[in-house]
Each structure stands twice: as structure tokens, then as C-alpha cells.
Amino acid sequence: MMKTLNVGMLGTGFMGRTHSNAFNQVGHFFELPYKTVLKCCYSRNPENAKKFQTIWGYESIETDWRKIVERDDIDIIDVVTPNHLHKDMVVAAAEAGKAVICEKPLAMNSQEAAEMVAAVEKAGVPSVVSFCYRRNPSVALFKQLVDENRIGRPFHYRATYNQDYTISEKVPVGGASLWRLDGKVAGSGVTGDLLAHSIDTAEWLNGPIEKVCAHTEIFIKERKNVETGEVTPITIDDACMFLAVFKNGSIGTFESTRYARGRKNFNTMEMNGSNGACYFNLEEPEYLQFFRYGDPQTGQKVEEDHLTGWQKILVTNKEHPYMDHYWVPGTVIGYEHYFINQLADFLIQMAGGTPVYPVPTIADAARTQKVCDAVIQSAKEERWVKID
Ligand code: SOE
Image 1 (cartoon, rainbow, N blue to C red):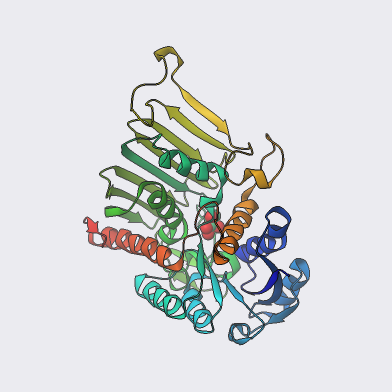
Image 2: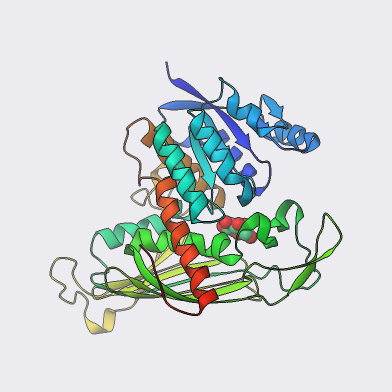
């Protein structure tokens, strides 16, 4: 009989919804080594917890997260709370021997991340940090093309992650979703919230970043706090741009802001190399753009001059990563499926099977955290910062 894994969900916000949906859906699309059961959800507010329980089908609720972690009938702890709670929750979960899922950014800073890595490694428990965009089929195809040497020697990497929801001075700080603007809760601004995604994907596609040189900006210096009603200073970075040098010799630019009028979730990445180039834009998630130039084996030019041009690949064929689990060619999947794909890979990996791509562990995310910390330090000290 298939083993059952009981899930304790710590948090009931946006990410609580994406993760709960993934648990409910994953068994419908993937053949899995485990059956997962939504056993218990936590919110410090009992009304929230009850509402969440009813919507997503949890068996029970808790208003003290430590009680879930201590329960013998829980196998996986899924941490989807604001960032300042991640460290204590992950460390406690690992010490209790639970498998751990944690939302990004892993921690408030690298010191916390190191404690989390130590706890998970000491306990020997499996872990995954939710860098969900790796599980978008077009991004996974991007990775496949890099691995097939279709980009060749990389020269340039270019990433943007732009949104526009904090332009108004009237947007407050704090509360269920705007805790992202509160330095004490979020740790950093767009660097941890958005660029952590871009850095994770960049290092996955193009290898380690060696050094960074950054500039950050706070456009609106104070905002009203939703919970206290007080006008409070804003300490997180509203916008951040940085230059990067990769270990493989290529160079990169990264830009992120919540003030790019018109941009909602403009997470893009482009790589230009000797054999070709690849471009992805999350606002058109079912497409990958590819410019084919050199043969992956010989580097010789493959197309006649009058035929060269960008291909816009509709990534819905069953030969494309993850797509054989869904519908028929031409029918697209959405944001929620990245979380389903990620969970499938995690469960398969936990059972010793072969995932489509291995998941980023807490140790991998601690590395991303180091790059984020280096970016913030570089902006503060106005200089290049090397990453170990
Ligand atoms: C912020 O608006 C946010 O929800 C991030 O926290 C997520 O990580 C990002 O993927 C979408 O935008």
C-alpha cells in the first residue's frame, strides 16, 4: 500500500493557498510514491484557520504552530508564513524529524540561513525551498537547452523582476500581504522577495555568481502601518539593480522594482551565447524564445542567413518538461501548476526516484541568501562584493 504523508501547513496566506492547492492536485497529475493528506493548518487567528480549513479540506487547525510541529501524526511541515518566522519554524520542524518545505526567501539573512542548514543537515530530513519558477515548463526547457549546449559559451545574462503595486503613497505597510514592505518582517524588499527568484534561476541556468555591485532605492520613505495606524519609516529596498560576474566568465545585469508602472509580474531572463540565445518572460509563461545560431557539437552556423531569427516556442508538447502530465498540445497550464510540479519533484526525490529536475534544498537556498545579502551589502557600501 502507498505510504501516507500527513501535512502541517504553517500559514494561510497567498502561499498557503498555492501550496494547499498543490497538495490537493498533485496526485491527479503525477504517479507518486506517497499519498499526501492535509492534516492540520495553522494561523494565529482562529477565524482564518477555520476558514482556510474549510476551503482547502484540512482535518484540523492549530493557533500555536509549535503544537503542529510536535504532533506525531505530521510528516511534512510546510512553512508559508512571513519571512521573519521561517527560521524558528524550519529549525523546530527539522529537530522534530519532519520533512520541510519552506517559501522563499529562505530567511532574513545568511546567519539565519546557516542555522537552518545546520538543523536540516543534523536531522537528515529532506527539504525544498519554493523557487517555483524553475518548475514553469518554459524555464525548465530553457535549462534543457543550456544543458544541451545550445547556448554555447555564455557571454551575457539579463534578468528583470518588475511589478507596480506600491507606486501610490497611500499603499500602507503591514497586515496580511503588505508585510512585504516591513523591514522587520520581510528582511529586505525586492531583493529578497523578487530578486531571490531571479538569482535562483540565474545560478541554476548559468552557474555561481562570483561578485556583485548594486544600487538600491527607497522611493517612498514612510507609510501608514495597517495594524498600528502609525506612520512608520520604510527601510526595505523599493528597487534594486545590480551587476554580476559569473564564475563561467559571463556577465549579468539584474533589475527589480515595485514601481515599474504597467508591469505586474515581469520576471524575465535572457542568456546570449556563442551558439544561441534564450529569452523567457513570465507575463507570457507558455512561450520560450530561442535564437539558434551554432551547432551544439561543432559550433558551426546552422541556418542560412535569410532564415535566422528568433523562434517563439509554444511549450505545450508532451516532449516538453512536465507537459506530459497535463492536457493536449496547445492547451496551456498556469501559475498554480509550478507549485504542483515542484511538489511532485520533491515527493519523487524523497522516495529516491528521479524528478524532472532536482529541487533546491535549504542548503541551495542558503547560497541564494548569500547572494541577496551581498547585493544589499554592496548597495550599502557602494562597492563590489565577492561571494564565497
Ligand atoms: C510579491 O508580490 C510576490 O507575491 C512574491 O512574493 C512572489 O514570490 C512572486 O513570485 C510574486 O510576487
